[in-house]
Amino acid sequence: MDERILLEQEHKAAGSKFFLASMANSHIKHLIKLAQDESLIDLLGWNTFFQPNETEEFIEAISSYAFPYSRKSQPLPFGIYLNLENFPIGYVVLKGLNLDLFTAEIGIAILDEKYRNKGYGTLALKRLIIYAFNELHIQTIGAVILLSNKR
Image (cartoon, rainbow, N blue to C red):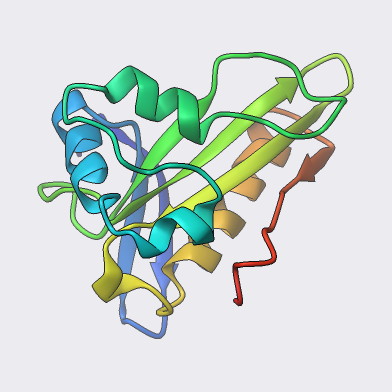
């Protein structure tokens, strides 16, 4: 089994599984390329245009947090993979972890347009929340949803 696999989730409607796994730099560069879609700026609320070599800046952007109880901490970003031998279709991230209060924020984006509105984002969020509660002992998870996100 691939040692990158961290979390596995069944997608019953699609009749398959998908995976949440840490990402190599080449996979982050792939997400940067997908993020060049102008419609994502309003949806995500930040400038999604990065150069391919700006992987650290991209991770920093997806890891920004909003709540006053959040802390600057090492984010836990995961690629959302339909197949571990391919590139991710998006990401999900735990960020702003405050282990004194057992709180965190969560963020997500399905950057590959052909996989949006198919349930992958919802299931990825659910799977990461289960991980946060069961493995990290987080008790409260917050998320910021922008008005521009009509879903």
